Image 1: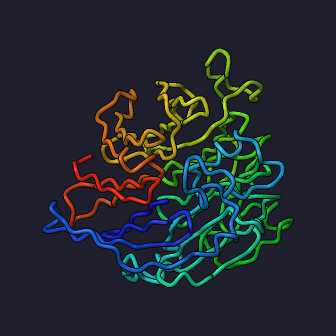
Image 2: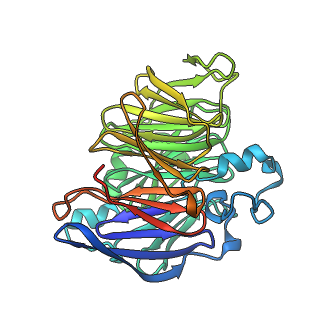
Length: 375
């Protein structure tokens, strides 16, 4: 996976090595220099069963560890590209108001998908372990996502539930925590604190997306259900699915749904869902379908540029495609197929020192490409 903080881009490779790259801009514009800084290992490769963490080639299946109940090709296919890592500054560091750079120890690396079903938190600069506890799910944690402000995280599990966590902010966690979590689960103050258990799915969670500005969490599951919850209250709002036969959007329990592979949300209240039949649908959080299309390729990464309202996708064909969000019309295509399939995408943050955002593209052969045309 790829993560961007300021002038730094962090890459996590299939052997779980973790490398930071620094982009040196000249007066905030291109040309720029791009160089690797330090490399370290997160954890032993054998310590992880995350399909996204250990996968390193499209045709290598023997090297992917998984349990006996997840050996189907469909299960492996759904696992590719899921989000197992996130970076956060944490609530207490944000409250202190201290300025930190992107390589500072205040930044935390959060990860899931381990054999012991734990959530792990490590410092970004030294990879020292700060937190290693059971994530509360009954079984594997399949995916995680951190909100825009870096304080709230959501995890999705094999047990068909999502859990809302507050990162290093006890007072905020106390205001969010519902009675069931507080009395029954007994989570105490600490680096991570579970505040809500979100129900509504009946099959394993495959992907999650969240917007703290909209107070919305969206989750997708293997049976095709998409559920929407509120972050602060933890309340269920609605569910929908796309019928596999008719391709119609239905607001009911998924009986013949298409498995959801990826989700991405925009702050205007729209979100994009990628399904296992290689289609993408654009919805509003109210459940209305706005557009849909078939991509004719399997996606491994999908992100939204909030400023320009563009959807960016990458997958098995090695093409980074940029779409207009409101109607899913194709804007342009960047061909990096020379380096293999696209496994990850990230946009550099937009700040006062830069005139535009830059797209970083990770490929299956380990290459990292920079797209510097303004998005």
